[in-house]
Each structure stands twice: as structure tokens, then as C-alpha cells.
Image (cartoon, rainbow, N blue to C red):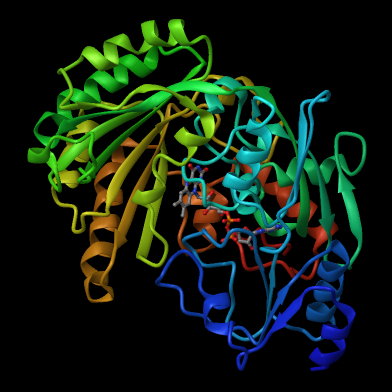
Length: 455
Ligand SMILES: Cc1cc2nc3c(=O)[nH]c(=O)nc-3n(C[C@H](O)[C@H](O)[C@H](O)COP(=O)(O)OP(=O)(O)OC[C@H]3O[C@@H](n4cnc5c(N)ncnc54)[C@H](O)[C@@H]3O)c2cc1C
């Protein structure tokens, strides 16, 4: 391999196994992933990305692409082969008049929110600010603003993409519109996105935070959540979470480290109307803790950061849920009681609103009709407890499956095999994604992802 010649072509950096930074550079958010690439190219420019793509293709190297490195499946890194790591490409520019932002492929949500918030604008981003925008957007993107403004992929106006043949192409409604369609939910299958252009919305201060109840009330709280969510206005996005209560200042000491259920909320609209809308949530129970108040949107976006530390062991499974039956609630309550780690959680994201207003087939993201998506979050610190935690995630999934759609959300998937990837899409959408893959990446160079196979 002429990796020295590649290094000379780049303005970015090549990291090899003997480099001091190698061990840190090959780590991703999920501490379970322990892969050893031959080369890590920290690209600085789209030209660097083109050179690295050409080099990997011409030398038949396995190729991984790293945005924020948060995906639990660990596809941002490979054994042997070459990683294109975009973490040096974190520029964001905001066009206030057009209400758009262009963010480079290595940005995290913290980078984007910081830049857009300065202008009182935002787009739908993740619940944890350290997550990369790239994988997040390409898989769909559910977040605090989705019921008001759609998924992140719905706000993707255009993208600059390095394709498998080493071209830099634009995907927009007027250029390569088929590619833009595929980038809106089809994952990293079609190339390396070096820049994302998003629609922005006037969002600055939101009414957000969470209420917390002891787990003994979980059944009642989930039934309340179901009714409350059913009539929520689009400005209000909600998440119910079975968790272990943190020792945070707003949590009563008797609840510290105890099983609990939270309902987190973001009202992105008129604040006094938000107070009115959130009143039933804050009155129900009443909660043991109420940490809801007006806050800058980026504060809400980072509220849960501490609950998701990097380097833990992680195994997740997810499913869309069409309607939350009493039987499903019983299963969730029972499984939450059996969580094997204080970092484990069950997250029930309320969808609908602007997400379901977009016609099925308009983007690659499927399952727009679902009421909820359930993420079974297996997170634990000690590798010695891996078997017990994975068993809990799988048992929870199996127990809930008869009451759910059993269709996964690609961004919450670990390595689950090709059938599960296929199940994440409507059959027509999947067939269209295969056609697109044949057009843009017929040899499946970009296969370390939730893979759409061209054959
Ligand atoms: C703590 C935490 C919180 C999360 N919260 C949410 C949430 O609120 N909502 C939600 O929808 N999801 C959430 N997720 C899931 C998240 O959307 C996915 O993990 C997503 O893949 C992360 O993107 P990334 O760029 O950090 O990932 P990476 O691991 O870097 O990449 C993920 C996949 O995308 C590909 N990829 C990365 N960058 C590019 C690029 N520039 N061009 C082409 N392909 C690329 C990779 O090859 C890989 O296949 C969360 C994940 C974590 C760990």
C-alpha cells in the first residue's frame, strides 16, 4: 500500500497503528467496539475525502466513514482497512436571510446548535449534543423539534457528497434529487457527505425539561403519557423514559439511584401557551421532581449529555410502536424492573406531528405513521456484565414485540443482520434504495453501515 503517497496528497492527517494518537483515534462512543484499522485519514477538505475514497477503492481496502462516532453498531471504524474520520471538518455557516445552515460532515449537534442559536434559529437535532450530525441525519433524526418541524432528514435541503467513484456531487431538489431522497433516511450507503445544508426555524428559548416519578408509579405514568401525547400540539415533543434516577440537585435524595420514570418535554412555541399545555403533565401525580422551565434550546439539547457518557458498553434494540396498549405498558413496567445496570433505560419517543405529515415514500425514512419509537438502551460500565445486559435487551425486545410493529429504527440498531435492515424500510422504499445503491455504489464500497446491498 502506498499510504505515504496518500499522505502527501492530503492536507489532513494520516494516523497509523504506530502513531501516538492511534488508540484514541480508533475509539468510538460505544466502548464495546475494539477495532484496529490500518489507516485513519483525518480529512481536512473534500479533496482529502476524495483522495481517501480513491485510495481505499483502488487498493480494495475495507472502508469505514466516521462522523461523530456515536453509532452503537460501531460502523465508524473497521478492522484492517481505512477509516475516513471527518472530525476535523466542523465548520458551520448560517444564512440568516434564507434561514439555512451549512454544516461540515464532522460536526456534532453542539457545533450546529451553537452557530444557529446565535441567530435565534435551530433545526431538529439529537437529544444528546455530542452526537454526530452525519450518521444522525442520514438515518432519519428524531429530536426535540421533530413534531413541530419534522425529522432532521426532512430539514436536509441539500448535501455535498463524495461518491464511490471519487466525484464530489451535489444532491438537492434540482441536482441529483434521487440521491437527496436516499440520504433522507437511507444511511451512509451512497457516499461520504462532506456538507449538510439544513432548513432553520425560529427557535430560541423553549419550555423544556422533565418531570420525575418513582418507578412504583410507572404504569399510571405511562398510561397518562399515552393520553397526554395523543392530544399534544405539534409544538410539543415528548419522551417517556424508565431510568435510574441520577443524584442530580433537582432530584429528591430519597430517589437518588432509585428506579424512576421521567417524562421529558420540549415546547417550541409561545412560552405562555407552553405553560398552559404542560400544566397537566406537571400536575399529574404530582411528580417527585419537576425540572421544567424556559431555557435556551441548546441547554435542552445538552440536558441529557451526562446520562450518555462515552466509553461504556452498549447494546441497543428498537422498534416502532403503533399504539401503546395496556399490555405493552405492563411489559415495559415489568422489564424496566429487571434492568441490569443503572445506565440502562427504556426510551419511548412520541412521533407524529410534522413527522407523519410527510407522505410515505417522499423520503427514504419509513414508518412515519408510528405513534412511538421504543429504544431499549442497554448501557453498562463493566465488560464482565455483558451477557446479562445483552440478555435483558433481547428479552425486553421479545416481550414487547407482540405489542409493537417490530420494525427497527436504523439509527438505534446494533449489528442485527440484513433482514433487520430491510425491515426498517417499506418494501417499495427498500427496492428504490437498492436501485439507488446500484447507481451510486454498485460495488458496495460503502458497506460498513446498515447496509443496502446492491445485489
Ligand atoms: C448518546 C446517543 C444519543 C442519541 N440520540 C439520538 C436521538 O436523539 N435521535 C436519533 O435519531 N438518534 C440518536 N442517536 C443515534 C444516532 O442517530 C446514531 O448513532 C448516528 O449514527 C450517530 O451519528 P454519528 O455521525 O455520530 O455516527 P457514526 O458512528 O460516526 O456513523 C454512523 C453511520 O453513519 C455513517 N457516516 C458517518 N458519517 C458519515 C458521512 N459524513 N457520510 C456518510 N456516512 C457517514 C457511518 O459510516 C456509519 O455507518 C443517539 C446515539 C447516541 C450514542
